[in-house]
Length: 123
Image (cartoon, rainbow, N blue to C red; front, side, top):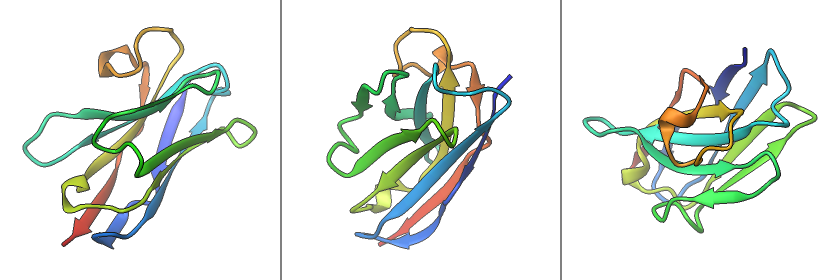
């Protein structure tokens, strides 16, 4: 079992930055693909970025060039640096882990999920 806890969410003005953290416990995540998803009010949860166990990066077009995912396996933590935030980035952000090699963009492929952290961007 892997437990995931997100932190770092909050209220920020448009154009600002936030850094989310996803701390894992229970098992080392070095062999897991790690993803970030978000769900805005009234919308379905969507994939935004992932980092494979080998370090390969994936980004949704909506966040490319603004968001950066990284991992520190020594700290068993994944990060999401969010820059140039827009009001449409307002959502609950959740991290997820999967030990399989199925596509990272599909949420049903993930085995473990955090509880989520709220990000609100004011315009």
